Length: 390
Image 1: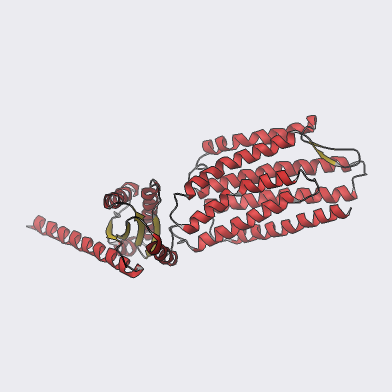
Image 2: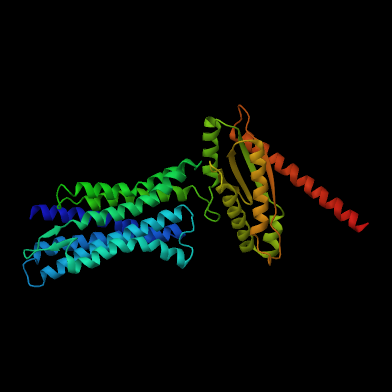
C-alpha cells in the first residue's frame, strides 16, 4: 500500500508540473506552429499521467469490486494510447522546430501518422490477445512480451526525428538554437531510460519522471529561444545579435563576413499602404533570408537589427558571400506578391571581418558599404529619369 501511495504522489507531482507548463503555454500570446504542437504534446502527456494516477487510485480502492477490473483495464489502455499520442505530438513539435514543412498539408500529415498505427494496433488488439498487459482477478497489473515491441516502436519513431535534429544541430551557427535542437533530440533517451529502469520493478514511476524532466527542459529551452527572437519576423533580435557577434569575433577560424540588408524606400510603403503592408514586407525579407541561408553546410546567422534593417553573419570565401547576397536579392524578388502595389527591394552592404575588429567596427563597415550602394543606385536612377525627360 505504501509503495502505491508513493507511486501516486510522484505521478501527481508530475501532473502539477506538466499542468503548469500547459497553462503557461495556453496563456502565451503567440501561437506559432511549433507552439501549437507543444500544447498538444503537453496535453497528451497530461492525459497519460492522469490515466496512470487514476489507475493507481482505483487499484487501491476498487480492485476488489465487480466493476473494478474493467475500470482498471480501461484506464491502463488509455495510458498506453495517450503515451502514443504524446510521442506523436513530440515528433510533430520536433519537425516544426526544424521548419521542415512536414505538416504543411493533409497528405504529409497522414503519411507521418501511419507509423504510429503500429503501437496503436498493439494496444487495440490487447483487448482480445492480452499480449501487451492484463489485469488479474485481484486487480494486479502484469506486462507481457509485446510491451517490449510497443516501447521499441515508439523509441524507433522518435529516434528518426531525433537523428534529424542531431544532424542539423551541427550545421547551426546560433549557439542558442543549437542547444535547443540538441535538447529536443534527447527525448528518445527519456523513453529508453524509462523502458530500461521499469524492468527493475513496475512500481517505479520512472516514465512520468523522465518525460516530465524532458518536457520541462523543452519548455525552458523554447522560452529562452523566444526571448532571443524578433516576434514579427521570427529571426534573432538585436540583443542576441550583439552577443553572437562578440562571440564569433573571438572564436571564428575562417574568414567571416557581415551582410547589412536595408529595404529601399520602406518608409514609402508604410506611409502609402499602411504599417500592415510594411510588416508583410519585413516578413517577406525574413523568409527570403531563411531560404537563402538554409542550404549552407554551416547555416549563416540571421537577425533583425532594427526597423527595416537585417544582418547576416556568414563564414567562408568572398565569392560565397557575394553569392549569398545575390541569392537574397533573387529570393526577395521571387517571393513578393505580383499583385502588390509596391516592389520590395533591398540594398546589401558586405564587410569582411579583419583582425582586431569590434562589433561596432564591423557593423559600421557594413553600414557604410550598404549606404554607398544605396547612394549609387539612387544616382543611377536619377540619371536615368533625367535622360528619359530629355
